[in-house]
Length: 118
Image (tube, rainbow, N blue to C red; front, side):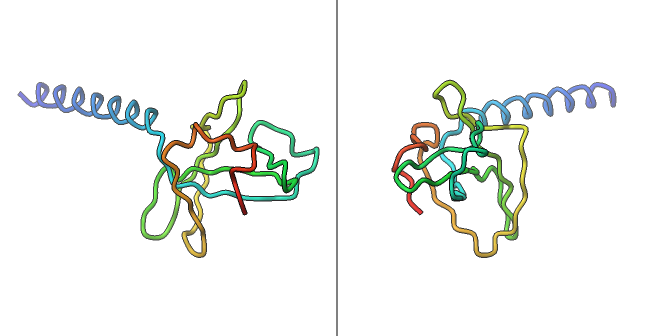
């Protein structure tokens, strides 16, 4: 009897995990934190977007989880003219004095154009 309950619990836990993971990968609306720096050639990597008008480097960090004290961030990168999220990156920051912006779809924004303002 207890083995049956353990098996059922394990299967349910696995199903919840798979559903949650799939649901999060389909999510497109996020709060984001945008960091601006003066652009230089050394920053040319997949995680840095450029604002041509201001000659600024832009790094975009979606908020994947938050509680009362902290944000847990991922980051966006570009691959073959497509914006993607780096699911292997995790950064934890305090919420104090941090400005966030909400976007309905972070993948439809061309982060390399003048659509982002400081």
